[in-house]
Image (cartoon, rainbow, N blue to C red; front, side, top):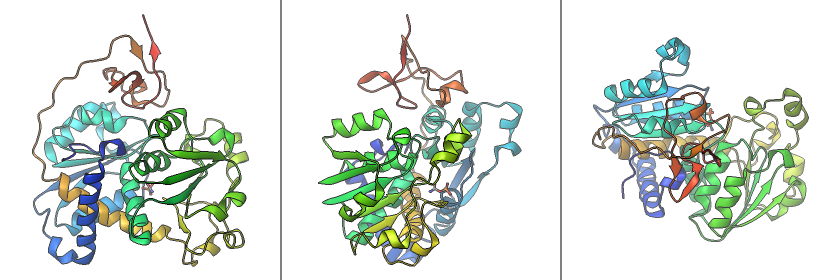
Length: 356
Ligand code: CP
């Protein structure tokens, strides 16, 4: 079943993933066979927030497929700086390109973009919400290194509140059998309620803990994350929490011999440099796998037919009050509810306010 837009990893089915991964493996094995697969296709790359891996791995992926890329990594050089809306920017880009990759500091921005685009939208990170293509890189890494996904204890450590890679990864892993989650964070940075609700709904086994040291020996995978300074309202709180978890070579001695140490990167001090040459550290490989799985994704998406923009029906009686939601800045956006959850915002997943 094709996917029109990749907004959330919830859009992904196991069959779709298996097909994408098989394609990715073939690209890794025979890259020359794909060097003209996207010839004549154009990718628009809209980065309203900084990026190294996601932005440049998408660009490299498209170039390795023989396609072209245009876009920006600094919106100050576009008419956004004059006040143009996201909707109008996306309408323009969708008339020039065959697929759009978008990163934004606002939760739900990719969903909003999908309402105004005739071509597929790929979410390259929307605030602290989701980052589905990082998850495709993570799943590729786990599959390549463990020979499959499932039957494993995964510790996810750090800023689970704001870490969009965490939210997408947890959502994806629910597709696979017998995954036990150790959610390691300080209480202030615990995983959001909507993610816990998702884990419960999917009957996933999870435990919330605060100690990395005592959890480490039980893990098959340790997924470290950065404390996300840019999402903190209070700089003092960031200073207090920024070094709450630091993995170093000494601590890693307590881990299993085959434990994978993953990180979406960029890292600050949460993984010491002395871990980098440990064979269990796979975070740089993870970033390289990200390029290959994005090649597979672009192959699937950039050949999709254009679909005219259609009006959608706003949800009556609700208003999203999440200050990080895209509806707070792009105020013309229709109020939309999640399917089967009328009181949850379809952009950011948070509970909405009922209004009379
Ligand atoms: N992992 C990741 O999203 O990195 P960038 O912010 O550099 O794209």
